[in-house]
Structure formats: structure tokens, C-alpha cells
Length: 502
Image 1 (spheres, rainbow, N blue to C red):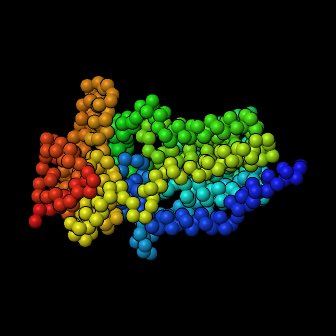
Image 2: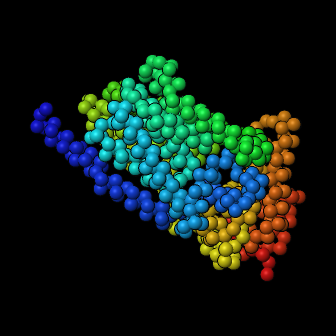
Image 3: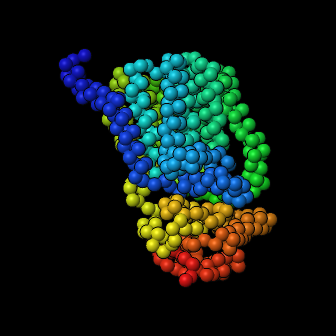
């Protein structure tokens, strides 16, 4: 190696040493904690915390309070609600603590699996540790503590097991079983994630050229956990199958973007370009053992993003996670290969700089609001701890606003989302008369529930999504009188704040 080559490599080695240092790890943790302390949770998290709180206080899930997802969606936040009431601090703070606990457990188990399996050396551990901290603590931004955030953490050990086995390493039985529990938990959150976990298994089978790896303990455990969960839901939350599953199948899932729309959205294009770039770079530099598994997992989760058809940034987060890990794996596995320095400069660095910008970072800033001025308007015109309902088709009109003003939510659902989805389906899809009748009945029931909730719950405030929606309700029998006894007190962007007439 010439003196010129050594001189050229020294700055790169210095950068690698800095980003692998414990000081960098502390910096990532401190910045993340500061950000989560000063910012607010998004509407999804706030609503699920509200559901958990109501269930803890005796509400019957999928009856008195109706969440569209299976029960693990809100049970994730139950420990935070319980700790909030037992110890103090807000549930949001304890939810952040939950993420940190899950991160420590997931990283600890994954590192053990990789080290025992010969896929992680002691010299590499600091870099991979800091990479994981950055991916799981800083990259989520406004999607922090979303179900996708938890699911990616849950899936990490089973992906680590696939990486270890792909290199011919062994996985301890107890570690494989725990990894399978994590994989099962990811599927319980969203069954779609079978594509990501399954992609890890498929990549392992292809690399080892043996189908027997499909029956590794972690995959059998994953299937067992998921099937057991389905049974437990029937026992403890039977109303999910009776009430919400039909809505999910006939209303929520079909109200989606077309495939063409999904394939032209920025999250898909960016992640597909990254994965394509990794595959291209791998063909030029050569693959190690680790990158192919991680690339396959990223592809699996990219499929789930497209299949869900919603286009929301948080749905792409698991793709981000494993594509970023694949980027590091390809770089380090081929660190001595020609072109590795160029790959680091033109792929690794841009990926890590750009990744957080795909998770709505502006909304994760202190003082940011979904609808600027809404919180101040509610506080100015409502009593302390107001009871709040929403005449809205979108969840984020009422949430997180109700929690930010320390209010109480009035309503079984978070919005008239069923009505919204039905309208979308009927506008974009040809359906037969029988299905149209079922959909119309679902929408009518949605409107009826809101009217009943407002009449019974007597909210202090009703947040109206827009003047157009308000005018529409005057022509809708179920909601024509929902604002009787209220007057418009303020407006924040399109959101109208209605309070009881004085």
C-alpha cells in the first residue's frame, strides 16, 4: 500500500472512529430524549393511548371505544398508561421509556445472536450499535413510538438470526425462541409483516440452499405466537371479530390508493431507488453474507408498504430500518473491495443524512402543530379539562389535540372514518348492489354513533374539520342536529372550534 493510499484512507478511518465512538452514542441518545421531551406525539399514538386509558378504566374494547386495529395496537401503550397512573408523569413519557426498553432488549438479543453466530466481530460492535441507535432513536422523527417503530424493533432479532444462519453460524435455542416471540409480536401488530419476516427466511433458504431452515425454531415460534394471539383475541376481545373485522375487510382495507399511485409516491420511489442501488453496488463490489438477507427484508417490508395502499410515511419506516442496515452491511462486508470508498461517500452518507427527512421532521419540532393555532383556540374558549368531540373524517383533527389540552375524549371512534372510507370506495370502485347497500349501512351507522355520542357525552367542544363538512352534515339526517346548542367560537386553518352556546 503506497503512502498516497494511506494518506487518502486516514480521513475515512478518522470519521469511522468518530461515528463508532461512545460519545456519538451518547449524543444520539441525548438528542433523541430532548426531541421527544419537547415535541408531541402524533395522532395515531395519542388516540391509541386514549383507547388504552379508557379500556383500563372499564370501557369495553370495540364496543364502548372502537379502534380499527386488533387489540395489540392499543395494548402496546397500556404499560405507559398504567405507569402514568401509578407513578406519575404523562403516558407519552412512559411510552418513550417503553421504546428505550424495547431497544435495549432488541439490540442486546440481536448482538448476542450475531456474535455467537459469527456475524458480528467485537471491533464492529460500536459501529453497529451507533447505527442502530441512530435508526431507532433519531430516524423515526414524528413516527416515534408508532406501531411500525415497535414492529421493527420486535423483528430485529429474528432478522439477526437469519443473518447468523446465512453465514453458517449457530443460534442458541433460547435466543431463537425469543427471536421468534419478537417476530410473532410484529405479525400480531400487523399481519402484513409476514412479508418482511418471510423475506428473511426466504433469503436464508436461498443462501444455504436448504428448505430445512424454514423450520428453524424462531419461525415455528413466530407462527405459534401469531396463532395463539388470534385465539386470545377471540377469548378476551370477541367484539373485534364481530364489529371491527368486517369493517376492516370491507371498508378500511379497500379504501386505498391504486397501485399506480403507490408506485409513484416519494417513499416508494426513494426506498426502491436505494434498494436498487444496493443491488447494483453488490453486483459490482460483491456481496458479503449479511447484506443479501437485509436487502431481502427491506424488499419484503417495501411490499407491505405498497400492499397497505395508504401511502403514509410511517408505513415505510420498517423499509427504512432494514435498508439502512443493509447499506452498512454491504459497506463493511466489502470494506477492502475496489469502490468501497466511493460507496461510502455516495451512498452511505447520503442515506443517513436523508433518512430522517422521510418521517415528517418538521412536525417533530418543539411547538409544531398539525393545525397551527388550534390548541390555543381550544384553551381560550373551553373550560379546564374540556370534553371534546370531533365532527371530522380524519383522526388528526381530534388527536393529539384532546391530550395536549388535558381534555377528555367524547366518542366511540376517533372520527367518522368509516363514512370517509365508504365515500372513497364508492367514488373509485365499481361495486354490486348488495355490497353498495352494506357499505351505505356501515356509513350510516358511523354517523349514527357520532350523533349518539355527542348527545350522551355532552362535550364542551366540538372540533369541525371544515365548513364544507359542516354544511354537508346539515343535509345528512343522522348528523343534521349534532351542532344544535353550539356556536362557533374560533377557527384554526380549516378547523372550526364550536362551544356550547352561552
